[in-house]
Amino acid sequence: MTEFDYVLGGGIVPGSVTLVGGEPGIGKSTLLLQCAARLEQAGIATLYVSGEESPDQVRLRADRLMVDAGRVHVLGETRLEAVLHHAQALGSRVVFVDSIQTTYTEDLEGAPGNVGQVRDCAARLMRFAKEAGPAVFLVGHVTKGGGIAGPKTLEHIVDTVLYFEGESSLDHRILRAAKNRFGSVDEIGVFEMTGAGLEPVADPAATFLAGRATGVSGSAVTALMEGTRPMLVEIQALAAKTGFGTPQRVATGLDHRRLAVLLAVLERRGGVPFAALDVFVNVTGGVRLLEPSSDLAVTAALLSSVRDRALPADALFLGEVGLGGEVRPVAGVERRLAEAARQGFRRVFLSARSRGSVADLDVVGVDGIGELAHRLAA
Image 1 (cartoon, rainbow, N blue to C red):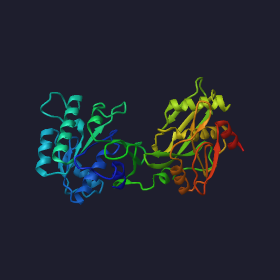
Image 2 (tube, rainbow, N blue to C red):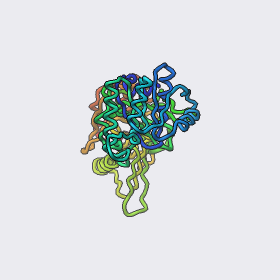
Image 3 (cartoon, rainbow, N blue to C red):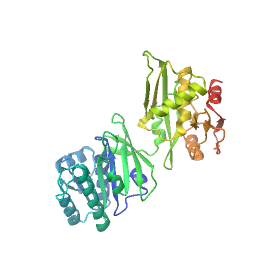
Image 4 (cartoon, rainbow, N blue to C red):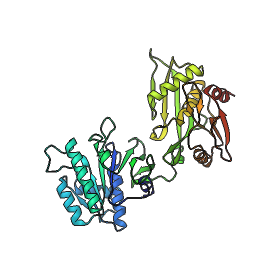
């Protein structure tokens, strides 16, 4: 699975321990079952330990996903000592434990899933991986606060931490590396949930922009850097007259505090009032904006919605907006612009102090949001 190998930094490292976290139902078990099936097809002995489903249920899941997992050894066991015994007896080179919250050891009191059991089981599996050599994958559920249940203990023990993200109502899933001792962090892999399981998406930028409607106000495109990979996403904004005493501020995929800052800067530095407007911002495709390079796109989308005037369909917006209304340059400009040119964009709005250009792209430098508003109104 090319996207899975990409996030891991090139593939599975023998003797490593990888934690795969995510919300229930996001596809963690499906991803690892497909991985186990492909490893067995390549002649690598695997053991899939299922503490939440019986072996018959895992078999049904494999049949439903049309995955050839006939040779994968499935163990319905939650006792850690039995798991280690079977892994050694089978000579497994890769062991999948689904999930670490259901695993327990007889050496400790307490029910499976408590902090002591989770920490001790993970530590013993780490020693087993380092001493015996197999790679170990642990499935960890995410709590309401967004952290791995345990709560954060497992992230310090394991070698690699992967988060499986995405909206359950959407077909796309994002696998994100938060820690990796054998590769770069912040890399992402994009998958599509189909009837046959999770399929890697070779061109995420084109996928996220596939449903974009041109000629509609409040839509802007920006380029994110996910590790070493540039990815284009659409940001949608809607500003409408409020029907309540206090206007609403709703952000999906964007920190609501960052939205509040950009609205304050637009009102103070750009002269655009939002006190009587409800503001809604949405990042399409279930993507989360974690870097400030998307500020200019959010600002442009808000300006477009307030004026009810569509932005140029072939324009990209790239830059960080400061409290003084200035537009600051961002890192990795040339890679972002190259991806934009490959996707058919012909114009880019960015900081006048940015360095970097790409053929076939008309670069428009702006010093502040006032100049941006003027250029968009022209």
